Length: 204
Image 1 (cartoon, helix red, strand yellow):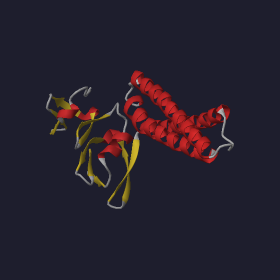
Image 2 (cartoon, rainbow, N blue to C red):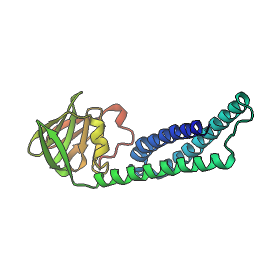
Image 3 (cartoon, rainbow, N blue to C red):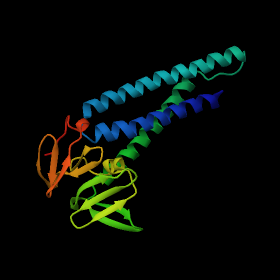
Image 4 (cartoon, rainbow, N blue to C red):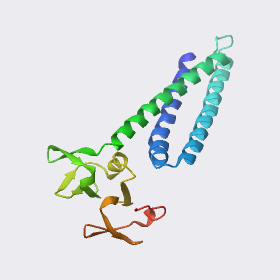
């Protein structure tokens, strides 16, 4: 019985950790939307806690009906297990946050292109272009082809310096020459601004 309860809490903790790390931390905390971050964080924690309790007591009730007289975990046991689950979630989130923060403060990144590892200064990148199954990293001196998703670069690079303007383009704001509501010009090259990216777009 205790094994089932621990399994349920473990699964819920993994789900909560994934949501916090891959949505709240990256999309809200790193973009300085602190009010939304804490609002959704509390909502997820209390919501998942309620679901955990509901699931656990449903299991306990079902077990008591099926196996009368069996030893069942009490309220204290459930609270302790629940507390351990959220402590593990918090620890995983903190590790993820520190790791992401560290990489985002680095002024260099390592890219693998043509079987070589290139160490690039982020300030030398002026835009990144998605070509479906690979991307082209346009730098001041060369263009590197990497077999990665554009979304990976979006997570890797500092959002204060880089911004996604289109499903196919991430640009370095430091290299913007001019812009309108429909395009951005960088070093003489015009890149379109996607319709879904116009709202809330900050280019300077």
